[in-house]
Image (tube, rainbow, N blue to C red; front, top):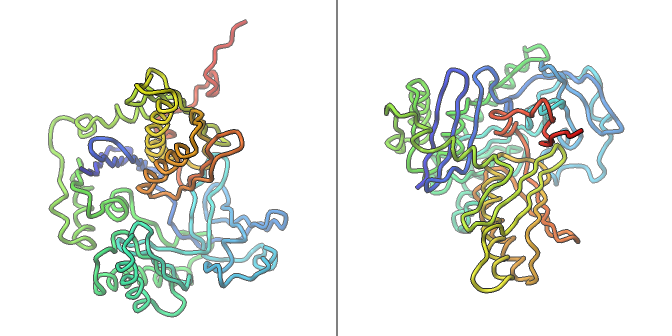
Length: 411
């Protein structure tokens, strides 16, 4: 059973995705600081750095945004020049352009922006200049992929790009045309606003968390969307009637006296997920260390002794750990480089099965993940794209005494 639970307070909106009672995804958006990812701005180039092939763009935030040369070139790889031009050939200080935030300001870094614009709808993503059609990899049947691609080619105008999302599966031409028409209209409004706006200024703001969850997470296999705030409930219902008519009977306003997240054990599951040591059901455990440079996960057999032999015990522990690591990467919203130190296995087949388990569980992750393979030291390398501040930063802060090192100084 898949449920989406939304809890609203004066200070923040929280969203929890629960699958068969287990928390698999969690998002928070503070009332005073909504997410910037997806927003579009008219910016002014402040500085061009030839040595970094990048430019800094003032979009009206406290720190200038970072624009890399690849994000200035044509969004279709086949239409980019074979020899990458210098950033100084493309931009100069004082230039004004429309940019879209693809990565929020994190730490001391400014936002990462792009000119590869994309506007997501419920069934498709509209890219005004991409000039190609793509279909979500989660739509696996070749016949359906071909049908959707044919309809998108029929609907798009020359130069436009369209990506069919998972929600597009089974949709007809009329439904896709409506979604595309609305997104195309939004883009025209952005261009019109840019004509008169002074740089820097905001041109378009993406939906708030509740509507984004309905758009991006509330899929046909989600059985319930439960919200404990009347205003958020009305917003979700209005958006659902507009974009997912027929699914509104799955939406419920929570009125019970017991707090929503206590009833579904959300905070307790979050607390366990953010411990440094995470126990597995078998008795094995993970040791999770997150640094600024990368995340390291160590797998141990712990209390699990198995019943057959050492290799089988190690394999079973690693297999369980692989599924749990994939779930926790998504739940903790980890980004960047991840190194996993699985327990050493002698069988190459077992090593392959562990990777397959990891990749299979990662398929449900909306954020792009890539398993790079085993290092010469037997560690597994993978990466996960980073766009927003992770969940941990909303609930935990680094100890001012030890700066996160977790050690006591003894004279």
